[in-house]
Picture 1 (tube, rainbow, N blue to C red):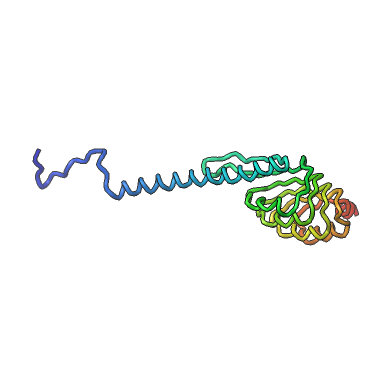
Picture 2 (spheres, one colour):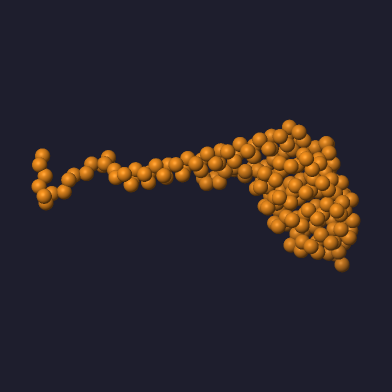
Length: 185
């Protein structure tokens, strides 16, 4: 079939320009790199949580994954742990940067272990009741920008230490006998 100068060539549906092929390849590459990131993030967090489960019997709470956000650990509980938790044991907890809740209730947690919690930007609730925390360890809590509640019942934290923490962090609910008595006045 001959084409005249006035007729335009017929394009088939499968004929693409180089630009559209490159755009399609770029979209596919971005999609698969995001999927790869989500899988790597899930594996990294799973590995850390599995180590805490194996070593300390920790329980975890996961937020399910959505279309664009990977599944992530939002809660961690060491309540069944009978071993002493020290600074070295909690070194990898900083990598769980989506943590919102941690419970060390009735564990052998001390002030040194709190230093690793200061690297958790999303931590909102912290239960330290029944631990070996003292007034000296409370300094680390002031570095938690989103902390909404900290439970300090049955610890070595004094009334003055709890009240001082409440003054330093007015938006944080400090649950301690001194802060409850202070609110009653």
